[in-house]
Image (tube, rainbow, N blue to C red; front, side, top):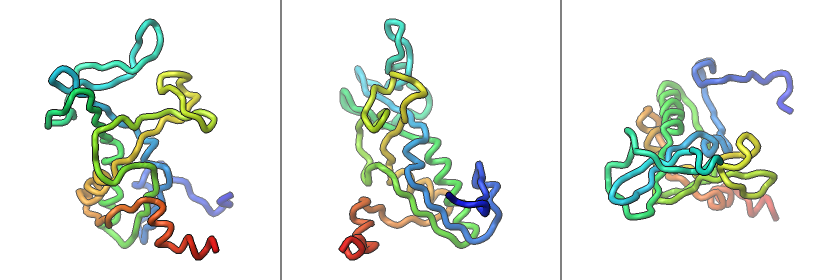
Length: 177
C-alpha cells in the first residue's frame, strides 16, 4: 500500500520538474514489439491474423521499420518503437535535471535474432494467440537498444548487468547471510 501521499501520473510529462528518480521493474517487457521474419530472401512482418477461423501468428508484407541488413532463413528480429520512445523521453528528462533511472526487466544484454514473444497465464506459458485478454503478453527487452534510445534523449547509461550480478553487487550475499 502506497498510502494517501501517492500521486499517479499517466505520462512523464505530468510529473513536476525537480530531482527525478525512476524505478521501472518489469515495465518495458510489457510494451509492444514488432517482429520481422526472414523468409525467401526478404523480411516479412509477423502479425496476429486469422488462419482456419482462429487467431494465429501470420506473416505480412514488411512495412517501414524492417531491418536494413539481410538475415538468414528463419531469423526473427524484434524491434520496439514504443520502448525506444519511452527511453528517449526518460533520457530527455534526465538531461534537463538531476536524477537517475533503474530499469529491471527480463531481456538480453547483446542484440541477437530470436523470438522472445510469449504469453503467460497462471504462471505457465500459453500460446500468444489463445485466450486474448486472459494472458500476460511479454517479450525480452533489448538493453542495448534501450541504452541507445536513452542516450539519444540526452541521458547517460552505464553498462547493463545481469540481474544476479546486480544483486550481488548490491550486497545480496551479505544480506542473505
